[in-house]
Image 1 (cartoon, helix red, strand yellow):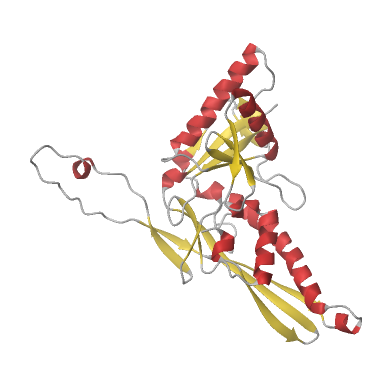
Image 2 (image 1 turned 180 degrees about the vertical axis):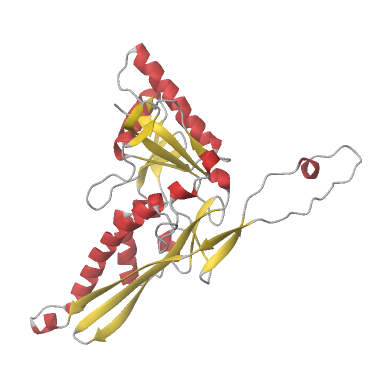
Length: 311
C-alpha cells in the first residue's frame, strides 16, 4: 500500500502526508505493509531447486522441504512535536489554525531528511535511522557499465547517436537484471533530464499516470525519478563518485522493484499518525509519529549502477 493508504485518514494526518510527499517524493513509490510490534522477520526469496521443479514422465514429484531464511527488520521512529502559544488567541488569532500550519511546515522539513535517509541511511553509523538503498544493495548487485564511467552524450551525429544507443542498452540491461523488471529508477536530477532527452530521440520515452493521478515519465516500462535534493539544495546523488579515470565526475542509478512485503518493501505499524496532545502550560501541541524500515525481501530487487556521466 502507499503511505497515504496505510496512514490515518483524519484531516491533519492527511496534511502531514501531503507535506512529507512534497519533500520526500520517493514516498509516493514505496510499497508499505503494516505489522504490529517493533520489528518483523521477512522470509527471504530463494531460487528454485532443479529436482523440485522438473521431473521425468511417470515419476513422482520430489518435494524438497524449504529451509526458510529470515530477514530481520527493526523499525525506526520518525517523530516530532509541533507547538504554538495559546497567547495567539488573545491577539485575535487562531492558535489551532496556526498549529496546523506549523505542523505542515515541520513535516516538509522532516521530509527532506526522510528522503535523504531512504537513499543513504546507515544504521551502523546512526542507530536511530534505517538502512537506505545504498546500504541495502548487495555487494554483487553493484554494477559498473564502463571501466572509466559511461557518458550519455547529446547530439545527432552518427557517433553521438551510436554512443547514446550503447548507453541506452546498458540502462535497459540494468532494468532487465531485476526478475520481473524494475518498476522505478532513481538518479541525479540532471542525469534524469539527459536520459529523458535521449530516450525521446531514440523512441523509448513514455508517459502515464500513477495511482495518485500524477503524470509519470518512463523509459520503456520503468518509471524514471530524480533522487531529489537535501533542504540546502545539495543533490542526493551528486556527480562526485570516482570510477576508473573519471575522478569525482560520476553518479549512481538505482534500479528498484517495489512490492508489498515482497521484493523491496517498507515495514510500518500504521503509517503516519498525528495526535493532538492538547494544552500543556501555554502551548498547544501536535505529536507526529511514523515508524518504518526498508526491507529487501528479494536480493535481486535492488541494483546500484555506478559511473554515469553527462559531461
